Length: 243
Image (tube, rainbow, N blue to C red; front, side, top):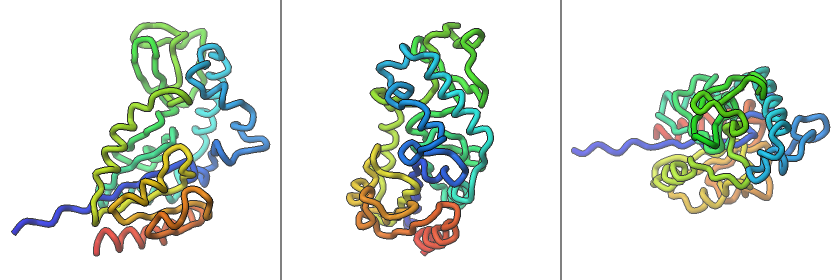
């Protein structure tokens, strides 16, 4: 007798899952937030980052310092629990390390990793931690250049090398599998279109209903603060994965 194939669970997350941990999000920040103090088209643009080298590193140094003072919330720990229980695949658009700090074994960061650096000259990548970048002392550990050291975050107009792996995982979902989207606007990656075409059972969990992604593109919708609706979300995923 051939055993039934194991159901797969993919958890796809955006910045909303980390908002409850105190991190500002790019699209909803304002006032005194870090994002409101810089022009993203300048500090997050691959076409001009070298011309604005000091400003770019100042911005990302402040983001790393901000990250050092927050902690994972219940939604992060829930996703990690799914990884342990169901071998869930964690795919995130976020560049923070909150899943890792919650105990995740592996996270596919499709837009890079804030606490790491990359040398655009030789291709080296290395962990950098939460400290500020120092132009006077920080160099690429491989080629020892300074001016080509860039935060290991995917900028506007820069290729995203993990996209191919991400699309392969999403497109391989079949009927019986489960796709959960948490805290994503669907503006960078069209998770609503993905869910609509996906044969798997799909779940959307954002703060509230919005024009994108649309609730009707998903089989199940549980809105609210990510940390607060974690028990309801867990109950639904458990039912789908175990029945």
